[in-house]
Structures are given as structure tokens and as C-alpha cells.
Image (cartoon, rainbow, N blue to C red; front, side, top):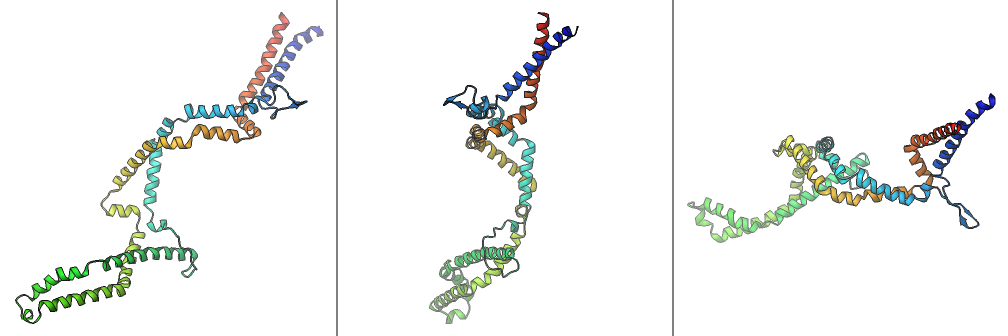
Length: 304
């Protein structure tokens, strides 16, 4: 009786054990051995494992599949042009425009701290540099003007018009007016050269401060552009940029090449962990399925 029971139990148990061990070894041989094994200078068959041996081929195939079927240019474009992404981009730019321009000022000058903290010193010097450039440009522009021409043109006409019909006309001739205009031209040039910078700088500094303490959004709205118009323009520019530049960007990114390179750079251990993190459940199922199939075959053998 016991012999009969063992006969019916042993077959399925042995079959299940063989099926389990066989599939377990097959799954392990996907990754093991990690390196080829040589005996007497000859490589043993099935070494290294299937995945380490075909890693470069797997990397290339994975890159091609992802780039061709999973992450296509159309997929990236539709994602970038989705309403949620567009809203985030537009809101981000609007938020940036709503910050004071002073916060974007590049602190490029690194000098000794004489105005509080080093950051304050650099900020002062950066603003001062801007004001100097603007003031110098305005002063040079004034000095570069045709002052002689202006005095001998518009100003001379105004003087002669005022003197017309008066007694002064009898005492002040054309030569006197010419001498007066020449002298006045020299005086103006000298004054601008000596005093112009000091007179212009405070005005420039005041205006620069007003601009830097304003936001980009305020400057645009003060120019008559509404917030809705700014938002719509940003959205339109973003869409055009994505539409026109996406193809070039994707080619430069080279999704297939990037994935292939990343997989090839992985060690065999890292690749094994990656595959198992994704497929461990499925591989365990294959091992258990081997045990089930072995048990079924053992049961069938009992009745044959």
C-alpha cells in the first residue's frame, strides 16, 4: 500500500523538482556566468551568460525599439505641446517677467567690500558700471552734435528775428553775431566736456533705478501691452519654437544612441539588477511554471 502511494506521489514530485531546477538554472544562465570561462585555453560553451554575451546587441536593439516605437518625435512633440506643459511654460515665463529687473542684474564686478556686504558691493559696482556707460554715451553724443551748425542755424535765426526792427540791429552787425555764435559754441562744448557728466549722471541713475525697480511685466504693460496679449504671445512663440526646433533637437539628442551607450556603459551586475527590477516577478513565474509542468508530466507518466 505504501509502495503504491509513494509511486503516485514520487512521479509528480520528482517532475516538479526537475522542472523547477531546470527553469531556475535557465533563468540564472541568462546572467551567469558573467564572464567567459576557459579550460585549457578553450572557452566553455554557454559562457558567458546569454545577456552578458549579447549585451552590445541588446543595447542596440533596446535603443532602436525605444526611439522607433516608444519615444518618437511625434510623442515628444505632442507632450511638449500639451495644454498642461504649455501652461507651465507660460506661467513660468510670466512669473519671471513679474520679478524686478534688479534681481536679474549680473553681479560681474568683484571688488573690495566698501558698501556693506560683498554682495552689496558687487551690486553697487554693477549698477554704477551701467550708469557710467549710459552717461558717457549721452555726453559723447552731445559733444558729437554739430553745435556750430545749430547755433549758426536755428539759434542765429531766432536772434536775428528778435533783433529785427529794433535799435539793436543798428549796432550789432552780422560779424558781431558770427563772433557771438562762435564764442557761444566754444563755451557750450567746454561746459559739456567739464560739467556734462556730473549733470547727466544723477538723471541717468534715477531713471536706471526706476527701471531696475520695475518688473518686465510692468514695463510691457506701461507700453500699452495687456497681460493677456503678453501671455498669448509667449504661448505662440513657444509653440513655434517647439514645432520648428523639435526635429533638430531630437536628432541632436539621438535617443537610440543615448540608450545604447547607457546600456553598454553598465556593468553586468548593474544590467542584471535593472532587468530583475523590471522582470523579477515574470522570471519567478517562469521558474514556478517549470515546477507545475514537471508535476503534470509526472502525473501523466503514472497512467502511461
